View: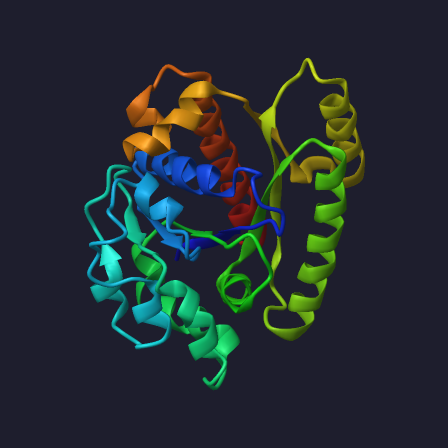
Amino acid sequence: MARVIAIANQKGGVGKTTTAVNLAASMAATRRKVLLIDLDPQGNATMGSGVDKYNVENTIYNLLVDEKKVEDVIVRDTDGKYDLMAANGDVTAAEIKLMEVFSRETRLRRALEPVRDQYDFIFIDCPPSLNLLTVNAMAAADSILVPMQCEYYALEGLTALMDTIEQLVDVVNPDLSIEGILRTMYDPRNRLANDVSEQLKNHFGNKVYRTVIPRNVRLAEAPSFGAPVMYYDKSSTGSKAYLALAGEVIRRTEQDSAQAS
């Protein structure tokens, strides 16, 4: 049964899509079976996976609104060696359409049930806002991975996200938890970044991943080539960091499974 991890932060520009694409590719490189779901109408995770969002036959819109079979929506051939549910501008309309639907918050969770046992990990790239699509992701997820920059405003955004998660736990998903907090675009020479990093570790303890994603030119360039960074420049610090993160996520998942049994 797949572990479903939503990658979410209400603040934009924190590396959500970069993390979704590169963590999915790194997991797939460890021979895990991975599905990446692009829930953002911008379709950046789709394009970053080497899939043309303008020419894809079915998107997450067709799954959520038209109730297409999940197998018909999955794109099997991506440059990241993982399966993908694509998104494009059509997904913007999904939120409006879902307002008219019964049990709209759990539409994604129910749609994924037939394929959960086919994957080891399912990652959901959420939009940078709290809307019905994000609520669907959190209702479907076992846990939330929060990418964030180590800056003052990011801390404020994290507090707001934690409040949101608490409310959603009460309403749509009592089993939802924080998978981990990932420090992105990290520059150890920046004093504020180091201060915020220490605050995070003091407040959240081992929920903060040991792995840190550095500011890295290759990481920023890779999406324009439609490929995860490990297939663009495997030797880059960004590529190595996401491989390390994949290892850390796997270890935590195995520890949780061992404790549960």
